[in-house]
Image (tube, rainbow over all chains, first blue to last red):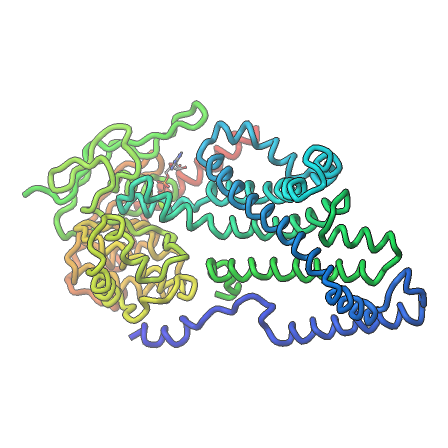
Length: 273
Length: 269
Ligand SMILES: Nc1ncnc2c1ncn2[C@@H]1O[C@H](COP(=O)(O)OP(=O)(O)O)[C@@H](O)[C@H]1O
Ligand SMILES: [Mg+2]
């Protein structure tokens, strides 16, 4: 019978996305190492002035120093708190607004141009105004982060909820689903990968938001540390701040990618299926 | 004897920016209990619309549909629909796709495992309960699609070109499987297809629709003995049936292509 044969051949697990493939990992690591060596050599022997470009080794040393002084932890913590609240608020509010606008077509048509404009505007440029309105404390930072992060989430939530494949809805209707069942069992799960993709876009924007908001005026935080260090010609400390942000960015984006893959594995299947 | 399924003067028109498009016109059809009826006709002649009307997914402009003498107004549990592009929920396993109908109807969860096992055995997919649709081939997904329609417990099965997306070998195998399933379950089946040999092989009766607006052009009773296996396709009687149906369809296909050409010309002018 055909099915016995089909089982072994056709039901093989699909190839997942490329970064789990060993050669790619290996090559990526090599590129990393090469870049580190080039940096060290250029900083030490070509430029030769640690004020312009501090060698990678000095950055490492400075990281340990700052950690021992206890200052670094404080900056990381402050930036983390701002990021956490700004991003969490943006996620919750963004998804809720997206859900409302997806259902309410007339309102959506009013809001669409506004949303596209706000999405494209570099809200961060309004940073100084927010500091003026809300002070140099944490609140102004949370507001800026919220505004930079919320629009991709709204837009993706709307897209996810309004582009449900028609056949899937027909299937549910044909099986006498109620409108509420169609929403909770078809449209919401179908929108979930879109929403997570929106969160992924927003995380990167929120991180930029943290730093730039702190550049405009703050008492602590990684952005504050970066400006301060630059003004006192501590170039190594500038790089310490940048590195920590880079790691935070990579980790949060990869985390959301992982979540996306767990929740919507069918979107990552190979082409040859 | 009252028909299992009957339509009376079924008409459906769509209005698209002020122009009225009549998709189906005045269809009166009776299908007996346990009968296998195929519908063939040119593209766009209203076959899908006809099935959607019977399932209650769209409302007729005029006319009525009855099942066991009761008028249909909305989707119910006495009819199951097998969609053309499998329509499986990609985030659900085969098991949870198969029991989607019973779940929506709030039937007791404790019965679901058995429902899936029975349905999957019938479509020849046993053991695939925990696979996800994207891990299956097109033919296997279509089997799950059929299994899902079977757990509804409906007497009438509507199928809209279920094998159109499959390669010809897989399609041939699936025709044999559908033959077996329909005989085992004794369901009344209404199958829309583009494959004339598929229609003849499976059916007790083939309905030929005219080009748009779809009306009943001709009705051919397939008087081949059952059980039929795939070898019947090479017999002279079988070939006579397919020739006859093809001749009837050919005019309609030409006409519908002519319509397309006219429409294109008008759109350009
Ligand atoms: N929802 C709809 N709105 C407008 N026109 C439609 C709609 N559904 C079908 N039609 C039109 O009705 C005609 C018949 O369509 P359909 O039933 O899908 O044909 P078939 O399945 O025979 O190819 C086509 O011309 C199609 O464009
Ligand atoms: Mg069709």
